[in-house]
Length: 452
Image (tube, rainbow, N blue to C red):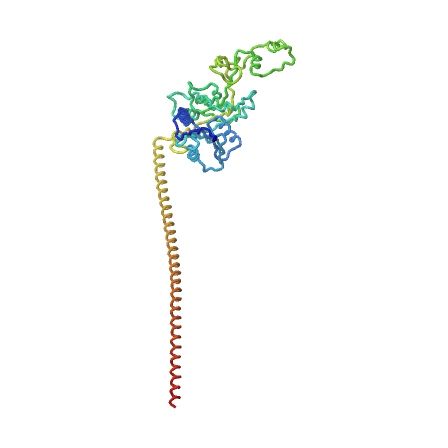
């Protein structure tokens, strides 16, 4: 019998709209709404500022370009260039640019592609490695940076706040993805970013300045400063003896000098008994930090419906910022706010009219330049076409001359052949005439002889 193959499997070429595709489309639409940031440095900077850029990228994770390498020596690359080249391809919505000169460090936060731009003066900062170096138990977890942090804005006021203060609060909040309380997972809440707005009265400011000068600190205190802190959330079970908690957390103690595990629990094998110091660190310090977990959280012993103590561990960096300018566009446009330069409405109108005149003049010069370039380009093309036309004419003329010479050479050969034929026929006629003449002469002679 012939071999029978397998049953043919039919493949469909058309796409069927399934729930998975609809779900993926909704998921991609949600991803498009997620803000993405880019932290860069411009110009020549110190090594500490390079580390600060790395710490800020770590703070903005996971929706930021962590391994982005910029050309800090190229000063012609502006924020608009980064926005135009990266906002569409990478979906960058915010740009944070650090720059440095001999007197100050500047941090610019811009919304791509059309602004506004907030310019801050970095009063002081502390790197993450400097914070970890003074901590007894520094926090180190890579999984904490796989989810966005919780944003807390403190002391920014309500609706009655100043416009630049409200703009700062909105900008800080929009740099991070919004959290939906009804759908967020407790395990994703691992970090906190705090933006604290510091207000100072004139009297308080002068007293603090005098105190700082007496202490030898060279830091000019100003009103309306913003302090940025970055924390990690650590949870520990409450109401459990410290020794039992260590066992729960799988931290095996040294039991070589004990006879039984009960001696370790009751502290009967050594001097002293369990006291308040053996309890949780956060429990003895602040009971308001005790919460009942609705679901499982990171760390052993943090089970659902279990009371745990929340503790914040600083990750760094720390920044103290002073807003001094707000621009309408992306590092360009009208100055909406300035902390040090104040202008009257008349001066603002004059400045605006002057800027408009400069813009009109610049546009006119640009149009004239483009017209000159187009005219020169057209003249160059016409000159090139004329040169090509002359070359073609020379080639055609040369080809015509070559054809004429070829035709002349061919006609001369034909005439020579005819002449040769005529010469040959003429020579034949002459020979015939000569023969006939000879015959006549011979006949005459013969006749003469006969007459004789």
